[in-house]
Image (cartoon, rainbow, N blue to C red; front, side):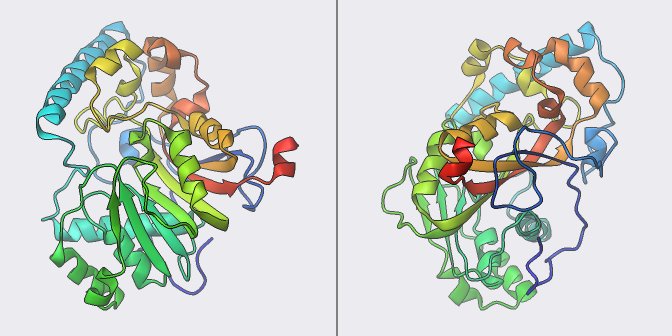
Amino acid sequence: MQDPELPFLIDRGDRRDGTISARAPHLRGHGHGTPSFGAGLSCPESVSKCENRGDGEGLSRPVGVAWSAGWFAVGAGLAIANHARHRLLGYGRPRAFGPGDLERTVEHVVGVVDRWRRSGLKPRDRRILEVGPGPDLGTGFALIAIGAASYTAVDRYPLVRENTALYAALGDRLGADVAATRRRMPYVVGTMPITGVSPGFDAFVSNAALEHVPDVAGTLAWLQSLAAPGAIHVHLVDAQTHMRWVRPRDPWNILRYPDWLYRLMAFPGAPNRLLASDYLAEAQRVGLGFSVLTEKRADVEYVRSIQPFLAAPFRHRLEPDLSSLTFTLVGGAVAAEDVRA
């Protein structure tokens, strides 16, 4: 799926390890119909060993009642602390590292754009809208630099801060005029559907944003109302727990809590706890057909061990859902004849 006109910004290989799909007929090679996983596994080890940062040890042994009760208590305590912090200070740190870590921020930005491109995005001459860009517009800068016709970013919260050093570094790396590129990156903040965003986009992208959206179907419907014919969606979803200390050790900690308790611990922007097949269903509700490309898979033994201790809504979910910790949604509008079929 690489754009033949440009090399990838970072050549790290493709770590994707599976595909489930639901009616994305205009995308060749992703499969159609009943959700199923692809055959290959590029990361057969445990989830923490799939992490580039090497946080913690693998979860490859069975876990018991005491272990699960302990993680329930730890996760609940940290969630309550997060709830208080977000209520007092607001949602202000969408990444695990700060904007001052310039080298890591640049690598993050170009890595995100490369992942979108490997998943089917061809930026050249495309009008692109990004949902939830985070603390900067680095991805927009990179997309414009490699040929996108336009870029617009939208978000619920005003998280973007000026980062002159980042844009200068990206300009040097990508050979782009910093001032000219920076002027072509509008940023719009508001509750979706946001008024004042002109239609006609060829592509919609996001990176770890849709899991923070309470109304996924409504958001997708609004995006699609802005779509040009043949527009593509490419959205990376990070479905696992977002608590950074718990994440590599108990990635499905977020699924341990009954709905009533999770609502008490939640805050604006808290993860919505939707799993891969839930996003397929939300997309189908609004006439979109998505494939789900698994980016990071949970260890099978870990999944089977924790499943009896998950909250009731998740306890009987199928293993493909509980294996997909992070995944990319790829697709677009489904023709009427495909819906009827």
